[in-house]
Length: 145
Image 1 (cartoon, rainbow, N blue to C red):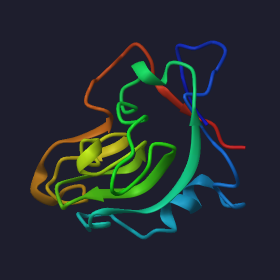
Image 2 (cartoon, rainbow, N blue to C red; image 1 turned 180 degrees about the vertical axis):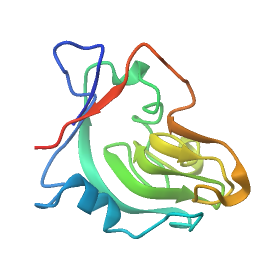
Image 3 (cartoon, helix red, strand yellow; image 1 turned 60 degrees about the vertical axis):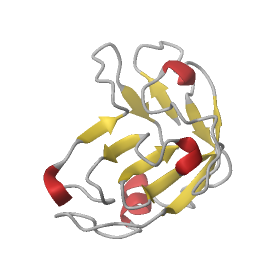
Image 4 (cartoon, helix red, strand yellow; image 1 turned 90 degrees about the vertical axis):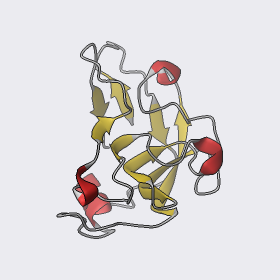
């Protein structure tokens, strides 16, 4: 689950349903799709993997969650996708909600890039931790159980 640090109740913004990690650590899950260091492109017009989620708490006002209610060509609204790309234009390590033309591409979620490829370093363009809004009022917490 993902929570905000400014919520003392730790209300989940996003919580996976089902067995998302399938017994793996989070690091194992993320790295099982490949090694995308040094500018290597991770996908084209798709997500390499996804898990079903439910939303709650302050997700609508949280940076990176702006497409949580949109379903698009590369992913539906009730998913978190891993290593996503839309049409060679941008990408995310964890795309929250829908992606594709209908959902403002794939540059939303956590670890996003505007490198004109699903890559970090490629072309040297903008990269963000989550969303485009830099906030110092809260951070995101990732909880693994």
